[in-house]
Image (cartoon, rainbow, N blue to C red; front, side, top):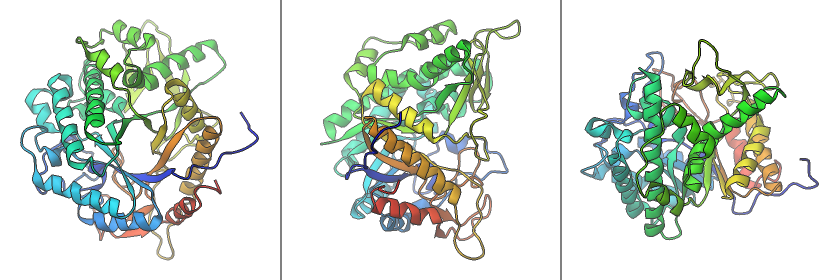
Length: 471
């Protein structure tokens, strides 16, 4: 809806940027860190591993100084579980505890608000080896014990916490559960069992946070792709409705309402994938509602009907990283109305406004955008700076969408672009760059890892200085 006025961003709006431990820290085998499922993943040899990444572990003071100079109000980062508990449980690693103490102190001293993700994909391999990881209920207690340690250790300085990043991606990507890709239908069943355990664990962590962190706020960090019916066909509209329920809303309904919505429950039951629910599980979720909703938004998808036929039965799924075609439910098709990135992600700023409004109306919780950004192939020029105008255009349009959603009533805590500095893309290595700051390395040549400010760095600095008045 077009409106008469556009709201200004609130004076306390958290202008931020994001990262994740395994994608930027490096030091994968230093100072007592244990192995995670990301360390154990079989890598494409054409793509770099996570051993050095952006070397943030050794250069965090330089990176935080650049954040301060840019004027960041918030920095969203994750703590590597295996730096704190190398095996996922058991003995604490004091050198890992010290690193995050030092990092958080540096952030706070720079006048930046730390936003900490408790768990961002890098699940301890030790817990997979011990009992199968998230597919076993023992995983709940180990996650809660880890989260409680973080609250007690860093809660005097960290007031914003994120429970689990992009849980839907963990559910649908077996390697992030420490499993192989073989027998994907069985892995989907185990993924939804793991999902239930993660939801119970997150609810218990919320309870602990409220007990242990004065003025602490905590919520999930979901991935939300705006979806559209491809045509005005009623069948496409129905497929869109189903896809929204079983791809976007199912985790948040568990997190925020403590319930399996009817569509999602039927979806699981028809596929013999409904998990074991013990007494007290749902009550725990209902009693421990998050304080806000964080979400990552990059693109939208177009949805068409995908009817069953003689060759496809219920449960038949095709994957392109995530489910792209589910017989009897939906299929993803190219949206002819949108441009896309080099990786086929369809650029849709209006989709961010739509997603924000839907989340606000359904859950009535303040929103925090924890990832939004433009990935591109980039090489530093021989003269001048890297003029990443496509990134500036992308972020400008998406920030305008946030302002439009606010004008229609959605409440926002802040916006964190992905990412502050170039880091390793989970599937594309260093060839896919998102940063406001260029890190001078290639896939396999570390070069000098020098930090260089792109044009977007100066643009974002000005946006923050003016509190988005020109957006």
